Amino acid sequence: MRTTDETTKGAWATTAAFLTWGLVPLYWKAVEAISAHEMIAWRVLWALPFLAVFLTMGRGWSHVRAVLRKRHVMAVVVVSASLIAVNWFVFIEAVADNRVLEASLGYYINPLVNVLLGAAFLGEKLGRAQWIAVGLAAAGVAVLVVATGTLPVTALVLALTFAAYGLVRKLAHVEAMPGLFLEVVVVSPFAIAWLLVLQARGAMSEGVSAGTWALVPLAGLITALPLWWFAYGARRLRLATVGLLQFLAPTGQFLLSIAVFGEPFSRAHGAAFALIWAGLVLYVLDLRRRQRRAARIAAAAV
Image (cartoon, rainbow, N blue to C red; front, side, top):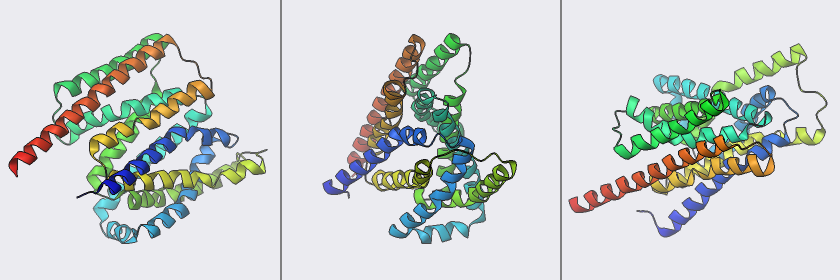
């Protein structure tokens, strides 16, 4: 049974994780002199030592060894590593190309894509409210397509890859921190090879200040630390609370895109986001209703 103190600590940790993910575009802007193609490799390589430290602090090495002994689980980890690598790269590139607004759209859509994947692959049945929520999100995307004449590819790729990543990780039954460590281990040889290719081609970033290079190791910290906070908090909070807090991340990105980065926000964007936000409100309310019903049934069965 969770104590009030544990729940409070969990809420603070989870909030810190989502706020960090919401503000992280500020970091990627600070290192934008280094190309996204290069930064994705540095992010992977610098994440390794930080993840190793957090694994040691959390006594998670036994989980890593357990996964390494299971070939079928490691095969799933390879798939999840590929998905998160694509997600990271697309997000970093979106920030560099001044498309943070579209990136935030992707992470707003993500929970609703999770619902669809749960229905498609896990046999989870969707209620009427969930179908309406998904429909509202689809309508929001349709508004942007009609208004701009193009698909919001960045938003859709971010939503789909992160939702698929969540599904694969759920099927793998691997703890958050050990799982991410192994994913980074899987991707690291490719990151090193990619940096060597860029070096051989003379395509490494040039004219980058020493101050910018000094910021590069922080890519590992902002990868590992929020996940550690999230893993700590998620174990101490109800799913509905975590589901509500997760919207802090895209909201932070949304506000940064407009207030700090000055990205254009048209009427079509307003209509699209309004539809998606309406779908998310419906989704959260339905989630809370389902949890309360489950709690009442559990209480009556005692």
